[in-house]
Image 1 (cartoon, one colour):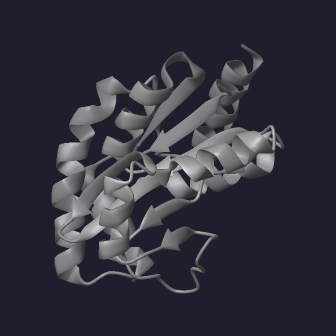
Image 2 (image 1 turned 45 degrees about the horizontal axis):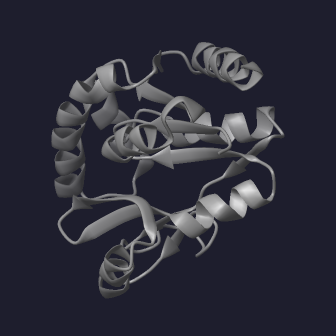
Length: 187
């Protein structure tokens, strides 16, 4: 079993920014493309940001045991990590880099154990999470309210992660991510 790095956070905490930075900083990584039932946002393309599949197909794959982990994150919206994606990346002799929701991160850490480094990205406050989500301009006010409610719950999962990375200053956050990940990869 190879190594994996799991990055999780409530929406608006900067998870994707940290993941993209790590992909640029370390050439040993390959990004794990998650499967989801949600619709693509903006310029997202199938097979790059996510594998976009129907809810019926997602449920069929759950029943077939095709996922390492999966979660219904919102009503009718599933996310999951396909076993075929793990096999694909390890077949390239790369370290898997996951960008997953908090429950998915906890489940992946359980699955991969000591071969995994799990990092929780923490925004300075719930108020800041709301500000960042509003600034994105991709979600309705009602959906932002739902994400903020969910973020309050997800914050309670911090102790289940190997490392908590505060994202209140982006440059400091990225430098700390490089340090923590670099140490894990040397082990």
